[in-house]
Image (tube, rainbow, N blue to C red):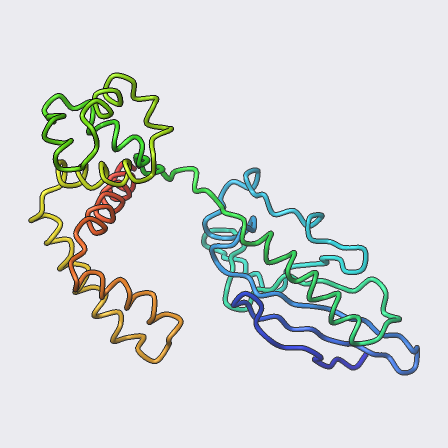
Length: 262
């Protein structure tokens, strides 16, 4: 059968290729689609997936009435680890069940199948050894601030503009914070970071980020997709929005602590 490519493009940053195989003598044709796999994908033989029982990738979730997953091509067997591993040339392969259709219809059906496969591959794979970072919600941050007896309610009232009796009520009944106005919560969040975060530490964190992002920007200056979001972070660091940086440092510390619990 003669094989020809009829579609080649990227869908959600993954290479997708579609082929048509035709046997003129038998008047038979087949359509197949190849969807690129990444190493972090939700597949049993991905390096991060040691326990196959926890894999949520199910071929039945991607199969349609017209296109079926038939194999995974390019998965390499590592003789050292004795496992199949993903490479840059690993693809999930689907086949159109009915070849007696037009090429245009086949491509449309295979695109729909490719989207289903990608969604299934993108399902988050949790490392069983990974410790989730402990992060407070905004309400929990405010509760910590208000229940801290070292924090003076009268002073907090002057600095936030929130009536003292309201703050005393929050302190006495922390559950009421869940119904507090967004404005009150945000004013108290500012005081939370000013109370529990050292400005000098945040400044060191800011300069560390400037150094890292500046080096990254030089590497990807010709790629706007990678450059633009990092440039926004770089400018935020340059302008020194220390409350937002304090929140980032809090998240960074939580992740660092979680990673080092192993």
